[in-house]
Structures are given as structure tokens and as C-alpha cells.
Length: 167
Image 1 (cartoon, rainbow, N blue to C red):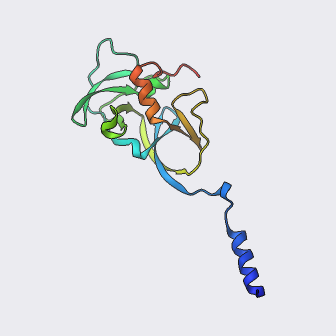
Image 2: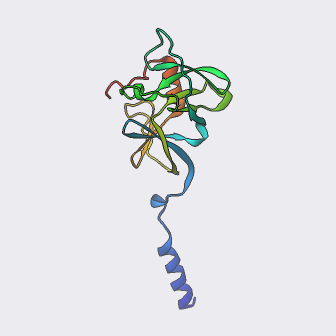
Image 3: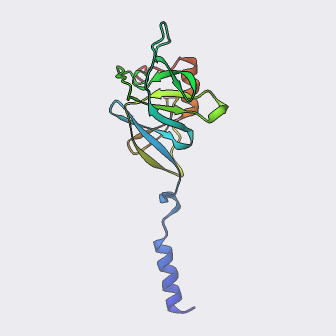
């Protein structure tokens, strides 16, 4: 084997990124602000983002339900992201609502957020934090808390874990 071939093979080997440091991405998350914290929602689970428009309060609604609104042609319960995180709600007609879910498989979740700020490329491998005490927390990427949307939908369907209990 010629010296040039050996040097080329060595250069290629040195230029390769080790598998544990590779940052190939497979999907993205929509990043929204609730209070001062950034939350990420898998793009494939975001049906739509739009201003809430008119939201009608419902007497005796479970804590966390801000009211009902006509979204995607249906009247749906709107859950407050700020209430979920233990903050006071600040709702106007322009407050963004994320319609989350997987289409017709489940009832979508309408979640109010303060703003939608960015998208985030998700690394192929992220540490799974679903057993860490916050049942809705899938992972942390940088300063973004990735939300397990399916689990969040289950939790707010029960109205049990919508409000942050300080954990």
C-alpha cells in the first residue's frame, strides 16, 4: 500500500465524528414560552398554532380549564399553560394556543402558551427522563424541556396533573 493511501485513510479516520458525539437530527420540536421557561413540542404532534380568539369561561370548570373555544371546527376545552406551571394566566384574543395531538387518534389538546419562539432540531438520541418525577417531561435539550405530548394529553384528560405541584 502506498504511503499516500495510508495517509488518506488516517486523515479520514481522524475526520470522522465518534458515534457518541454525532448530532444527526431526525425530527424537530416547536419551542414555546410559558413564563420564563422554554418548552418543546414534537413538530409531528403539533396540529396547529393560532391565536385563541374568543374563549368563553365555563362555570365550575376543573382547575386549569380556561374556558371553551371553537378550534378546528369543534368546541374544545382550552387548558392554561401558565396554570399548568403554577403561574397566573394572562389571556387575550391574541394569546397563542397550540393544538396538540395526533389527528383523529386522540382528542387534541388546546394548550395556551405565552409565545411561540423557535424550532429546535432534536438530536437522534436524548436521555429519556419520563421516570424522573415529572410525568410529562420527555427530555431536556439545552434549555428546552421537551414535553411528552401523549402523556400530557392523558394527564389533562384526567384533570389530575394539570397544575404544577411544585415538584
